[in-house]
Image (cartoon, rainbow over all chains, first blue to last red; front, top):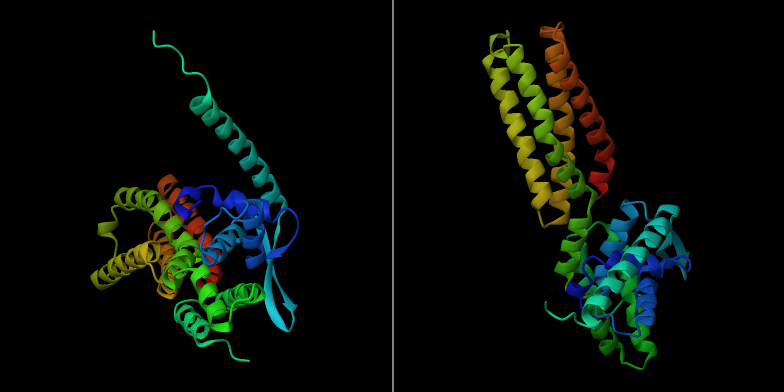
Length: 111
Length: 191
């Protein structure tokens, strides 16, 4: 799946990747790759601005830690982020159910 | 050990456009990516090349950070609320026949030029594609907005203190906007 197809869904994916606990930027990308079975085709560098945007929105919280003598920015979900993720999941289920019904269900006979 | 030349060049391109704290974070991620490729058996140069390719075009990253910056968000909000506050001030000044006030022409011209400059700075911050200029323009516009609002409010309170609701609403809106601009200033400065 390419970046343009993800428009509008990247925030939900990033929040979901942080649901399991704090991660740094590359670990978020790794988690997304694993959870999507490697089908996510997104430049890793674009994950970071998206994380900063979510942090400014108060949905995740960033903090610096030192790993192997090097500073590393870690991110974790905030309460507002968990709530937003829950809302995005519900919206996605509705959207997916609607699209499945429309694309895969029986086509009604024209009157 | 210094990183391979390719990685250094990539980080130098990012450093030219982004603040050190962001570049530090990206450097960590890039190094993790390079190590991952080394771990799957690639030679150092090939691992560096794969890491850089995986991270993507530096210009795209810079543009994405610029779009996500506090400076741009602040500028867009100030542009959004500007017409409403401006309309309130226009009603206030017309109601008070402000053209008859004892304000020197030079001061009026200076205020007009400052207003145009602030609007220009906000437009530059809202639409700019380069991170640092966007942050600088947004920070300057925040200061300018606060000064213009203070000048307007003080002028009305000194020259026409008996004005009622239009002035009260305009001063209250300006106070709110000034508070927002000053609160946003540190974030705009740091991106």
